[in-house]
Image 1 (cartoon, rainbow, N blue to C red):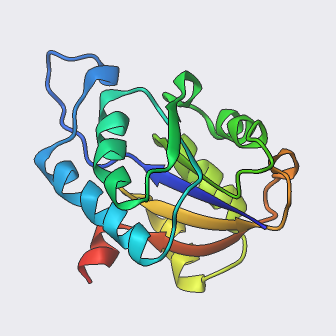
Image 2: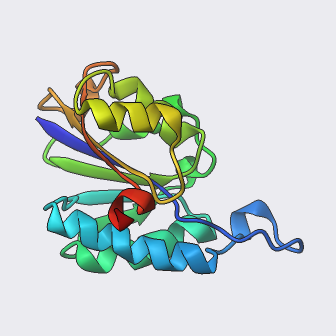
Length: 170
């Protein structure tokens, strides 16, 4: 089994004078991201590798989530910026087989589309929520019945949980 963690960046700000790639997190995003990291640690969701979009808002999300995660390896991945689900799936398939838990920190709509493609079974409430909305700082936890990332292929996956800032407040 392999575990895929798909994290959409936390809530960003929209300053008029900045390009999209340069947009920072909003105050709410800076509050939500560490909460997601703590929830991941509590659920023992520790990625061996995280691939992070180089956009400012995803970098800041990672910087606020990662302290709770026992120092995972990570790299900034240019292909994740604005990536469609098929590009994200290619990144998953390029992951070395020895990585058991992989995390992608990216953007919508690619993150949501890929999560939904794999989430055909699993926690029924989480599936309903992921199909309704994939909010900022949303984290899909997917179990894939494979032993090599090259074999990752939707819909062969199981949605174990879907964490969002609202579910953490509940």
